[in-house]
Image 1: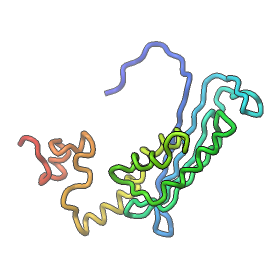
Image 2 (image 1 turned 45 degrees about the horizontal axis):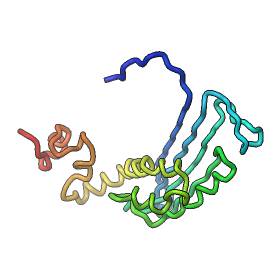
Image 3 (image 1 turned 90 degrees about the vertical axis):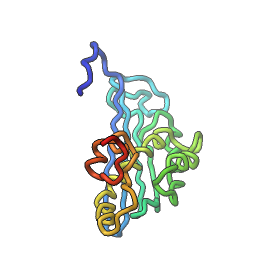
Length: 184
């Protein structure tokens, strides 16, 4: 169902997020992410060489990468702040490497946020973690599908992870009737 047509409005802010998942030649996997914020108007900013951030110029611009294995264990993580509103913003990317050793599984975001919390990290890079974890799962889909065909898990991995995969949903009834718990 499409969204209702809103009243007349003026666009003020744009956030663009891009994520890509890769299989590497060395058997590991990468998720690369970028986030950029722009405004539709210019404003003064003492930390920029020009003294301003112009309309369409990046206010925030960060890139990040996690490298992980088939078990979703992060081997390395790196990030860089290319644009920030303050001269010291690039320092917030330094703790991204602390994600190494974490597993992308239940509790990942809590553990990652603990390693990059508050003044230890960058809010915008922390915001990317949810999407990076999701893209890591999506990147591993063909690998896990092949592995599950060879040795099926006891219950489907996606069971009860979202509304569509609720154990009482029509999608589960059609895909995994043995796991279906809804009415007949």
